[in-house]
Image (spheres, rainbow, N blue to C red):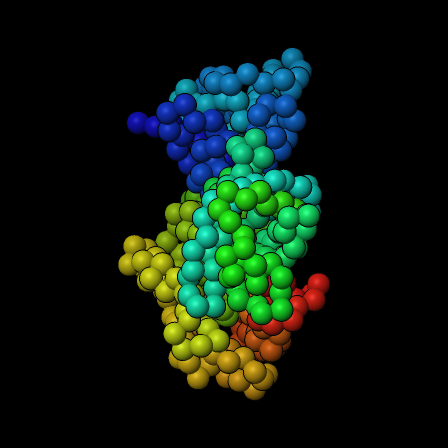
Amino acid sequence: MAPQVKVLPSGRKFFVEGRESILDAGLRAGLNLPYGCANGNCGNCLARLVSGGLKKIRHYDFHVSEAEKTQGYFLTCSHAPLTDIEIEVKLTSSPGEIPAQDIIGKIKKIEPLSDQVMALQVRLARADKLQFLAGQRVVLGGNDALPEIELSIASCPCNAVNLAFHVPLLPEEPFSEQLFAGAIKIGQPLRIRGPKGQFVLFEDLVDVPSPKRRNDEFTLPPLLFLSWHTGFAPVRSLIEHALSFETETPLYLYRLSPTPDDIYLDNLCRSWQDVFDHFYYHPLPYRYTLMSSRKEADAIIEEIAARHENLADFNVYVAGPEPLVESAAAIFPAAGVPAGGLKTEIVCLGFCDERTPL
């Protein structure tokens, strides 16, 4: 039986397989454990052992003082559990806690998701894994070889060496043009800078205070996600992270698209609904997909709000064009979503500036 790690004060639990480090196993399980180099040099992954036994599995150069060792402090990147253990460490929950990073990766995969969206996967070296929160963005390119573009990460932080992106077809955007024209190749180096953005899970969902635990177990409020077109990229990251929590709290996903046949990765969303009894997927009718006016956006938000009798316990996440975000900010609170229970990200299809990332 693989040993289990319980993280205090959050109450999160995960198993460590084989010679996995506690850090690697925790990240794989979707926990935002703090770290820097992941190689035993920086000390950012320092945690305190509360109970149970540890074994050292990797050499490290960071100096842990004798006083710290006496108090139970150790590096999660260089140790594995001998038994079930409890450790004390504050999970990374705020974008401000993550350092700016500048990393070179290699393009691993390029494939069309639809006529309008291309999947881009970038592989990082293990020593250069990107620390980020689900829902955040990075800047790709910006060197002599490739133009710069800012995109949301479409994958979970649990796999920080394989980053996924959904690149929309934008005729006057140089990176998009080159990607769709085949000028960007598999194996090509790609610079990554970031992360950026506040479109992340609310902090109390990551490091849960005692009022939100049941019998000392981790739990979540109901989560509602609404995405339009490539707004699904940050929403996908958030959903995969939330699903890793292994709770039975309902998750609702509503998706919109600029064309009737362009709800890309529809089968992925349906597979989530098939596998998880608490996940509910709703692709919305085409009459709501153009996002050309605030009136149209109001109709979408009002319909979604009407489907839920009580939104007072919900956290809501909306990623889409400005009319949709403005409608969400006006209608969801009036429908009962608590103050501070709504997060939004403006996503455009066309000309974007610094306030409107893709």
